[in-house]
Length: 340
Image (cartoon, rainbow, N blue to C red; front, side, top):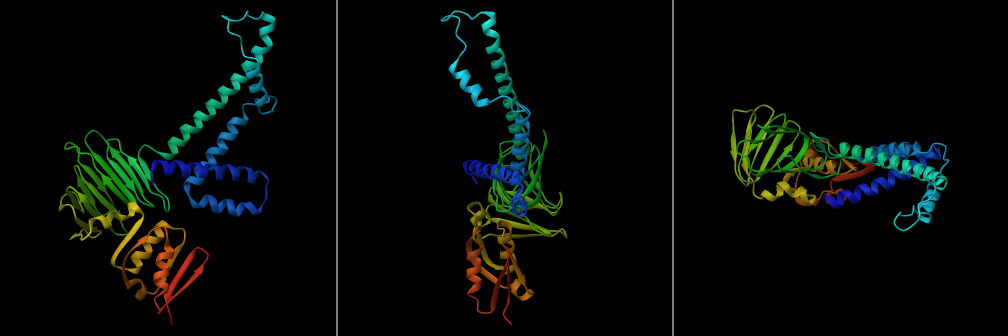
């Protein structure tokens, strides 16, 4: 997701939040379920709604009794500007007082609004870019520039935490998948740490995908050392990958198509004789429509192909052509099972 796309998406969500704020004032009970569903779609929905509600509350404090018409104050200020002493005779003390009081009220209102906006913008920045943790929601991708100049591209449903200091550059990959483009710094090795692996690099590009019970590291450029601890290292070069398992073992392999490991950057999913269970799990990471497989035999069936991550229907069309499979949808869940 580019910066422009991210900003445009934020504007869209902000407009939706404003619409919900107005709709909820009407107190229609039918809106409650739809509003709850909208909030559950993304943490960004929650963040924008709370920010908008907080801003409205702050602006309400400027004139709680609504005694001042802001539009009228603006019109009066435009129609009766304060004369410049070089071009006009200074008003008398009696002439100045009424205008000064109204202008003082106006500028106090402007100052309060400006303060509220500053608070709101600061809150937005704090919520969006916490100092030591970054995350994405379902279907969201994000690019972050790290304090050392390195870049990290976060895939969907990813969360990571930074621990940078004068002597170390450590990143804890808590969930998901990320591509790291590392700035060279021989004095501070760059490490990505999961519950099953440590990937150590100096200046390179590599992808780290944290699975349940294992971690796969794929090298795009340069060299990376992978270990299940800080002592046993498996060196990897460009076009190589390794998977570290919870039991401490590390399996190294050559990758026929290194670009396939980062095809997700273009929101494509590439599979090569992968079990259907793995394919379905990948699609479920990107979409609200969740696919469920019934039966171990079906989960082991393998497929090869490149599909659009945002279009689960492309996978479903492929599976619907299998004569022994039955597909049935129940709300946001698509259940696939063997025909009996």
